[in-house]
Image (cartoon, rainbow, N blue to C red; front, top):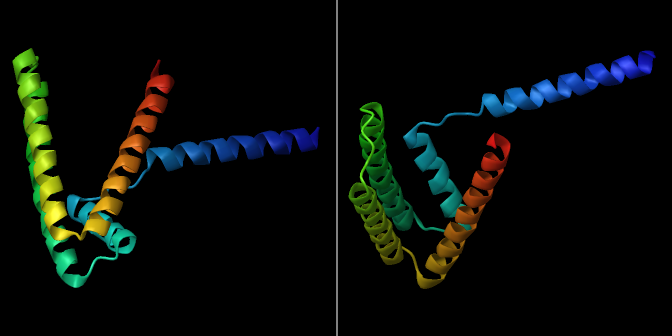
Length: 141
C-alpha cells in the first residue's frame, strides 16, 4: 500500500511539474529572439562577421515590421470589426510580398550553399509549426 501511495505522489508531482514548465515557458523580447536566431543561423550556416551583421540588421527590420503587423491586427481585433474578404486577401498578399523581399535579401547576403541550407531550415521549421498547430487543434477539440 505504501508503495502504491508513493508511486501516486511521484506521478502527481511529475505531472504538475510538466504543466508548470509548459505554462512558464520563457517569453523572450524581440531583441533576445533575434540574437538567439542569429546565433542559430551563425552555427548552422557558418556565417562570417560581415554576414552576421547583415543578417542581424535584417532580423531587426523583420522583427520591427512584425511588431507593427501584430499591433495593427490587435487593434482591429479589439475594435470587434471583422476583416472583409478583400482585407484578408490584401493582408495575405502583403505578407507574401514581405516574405519574398526577405528571401531576396537573404539570398544576397548568403552564399549559394548557405542559402540552400537556410531554405531547407525554413521548410523544416514550417513543418514543425504545422505539426504544433495540428497538436493544438487536437487538444482543443
